[in-house]
Image (cartoon, rainbow, N blue to C red; front, side, top):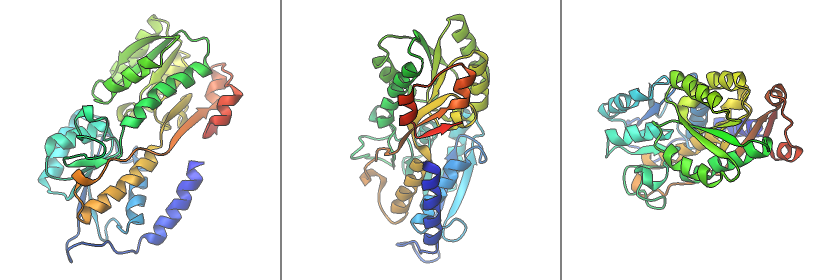
Length: 325
């Protein structure tokens, strides 16, 4: 399971902490800007993974590296101003995890290197290509994750085989979702899709009211930092409507959502630290190929399934990376 692997890596990272970072000008302590769409407490698992990745490459916060944090606190409209603040501080590199933060950082600067966990399909405009980013953005790609949305729909249909109408909830503020909807539509054989959007809590309420009116039989919630921030509200809305829900982030079933399928974003944040390390040692983001996520996970909350009166197919349980009892 991921947690055991994570703790093992953590122990190794702590042992690696005393290692000195290379290729730095004596007396110059680099500064990294961390641009987050959530709160620090809410993003703690991702931040911890990033700091672990830094320790693994010899960087220790407060000793040989400083981090300037800027948190949007669930309000993505604040990201452009926060990105501009980091640019004014002249940080050496910006870590902007999800797509919305990466786009805000990219719009704020064309010179400061940006590392993201969701560099996205080249069509989004963050990179010219995965092999040769060509600008000031690099990191982990979101493009391979497009297929996970379609796979999530297939797993949802496997869980609820008689479903005929599935609501698809996206965030119009997330530029990756328009591409992801096309992937979901390509896998929608046998079901009718109800496409709905939400940017915040009020629109979430309206979206679920629309699901009830159209008698959706299940809901696919796309991976998104805003949806992750309001995960307990999404859980309660799905429970109220007795809707089986597939999410793109594992933190949803961790708080009582039915199931999730997607990339292991904690691992992505840990791996993003290696890009920060290379850039601080002189590498140019334009020359650092964008990497694909390598860890994907299926998480099922069995207690929620029982509450909904669902029997999860044994074959699906066997494929799950984690089953929450």
